[in-house]
Length: 470
Image (cartoon, rainbow, N blue to C red; front, side):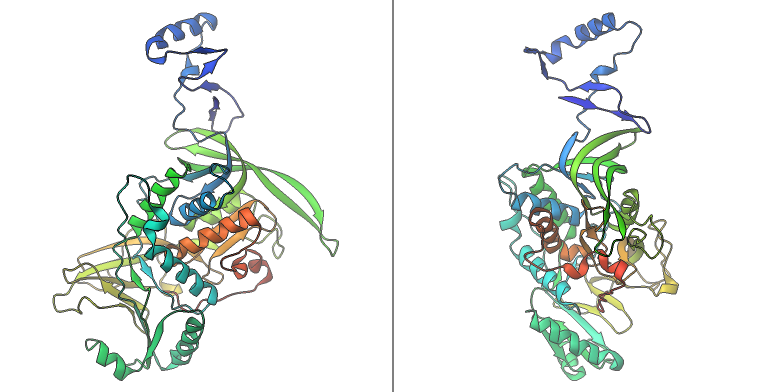
């Protein structure tokens, strides 16, 4: 197989050949004849270095049906469902491009790992219910032959949300929607709250909602590694690199009201290799933008948002990185093992961490308090002084309505989104991955209708506000 390696910023150039390939019916005995082959090539091409024999095993393939930009839990979930729903084994070639193979700054590994159904929008509730079922049966979905079973260390202690007098009516309305969608959530008065959780100070609390089933927290790193292991067993390819360019074709079309629009189709992705100036072009049919907090940069590479303001062509993907702190502290006399994840009226939250009387938590900042996302340094004064440790991670924050963006772009017709979940992408990844795969393969959402999450709402100004973002 002939591979192409292009110096960054240049056109197609040097040809390379992978060790052990055949040509003209003659099989190379690689280990024994390397020096002999080099001498022969040098004799044919005097004065030229023998760079035809470079190792290209680290490069992505020249062709892939689907290129997924972002190898976090959302990107891996899309890859998983594409392979599970393909018409026959091996029908779709999928490549996942991830720039950080250590996942040291990935949102997945830095998450607190929560899952709940206490949202205000039916779509978010349905997604989390789907994910709860997926996680509960994780080894039915992600089992790999001869590999040990996954242990997500799921703690089913639930979520406990507290509301003040001014937010009580909204909480009642939310719980009504949650119950209609099948979530097991109870409302509790301050007296009932004190009765069940004597350690809670109910001053200023008018009402509480408590998730009684399929809520709690789990090990996000285990889910990430389990998905990665499974999709590799299904034939998904991985590449460590950064997408730097898209090549696309354009077609001018007229809308029903005779307005001209330009439709684009990406046909090649350029992947810059790690610690190198070289890039590899990958021809593709579909691009999935699952780049998390950096997904707007990937969208901009495709020309999304470059048109005049106020037009569909000029509508940008409103997703940006927002930094969130997580603090860990020790409290020997703190609440016991059945303590739920508690979010109080101020927006602060906490949960138990392990069995050693340790707790972790934090709170979302106001718009005025938003920290600089340029790095993941922790502001230890933001929460409280007496903490054992702390870390920071990124939200892929949708500044428009704090909800996910799912499905195709209306003008860059073969770029699909799985991003912008503003802190609940981890828990909704299984359902989102299936939804995107259904849209790619079937042309419509089937399991959960996520049409309200399409990109077009940004142009139309149709917010679908989620009220319960922690």
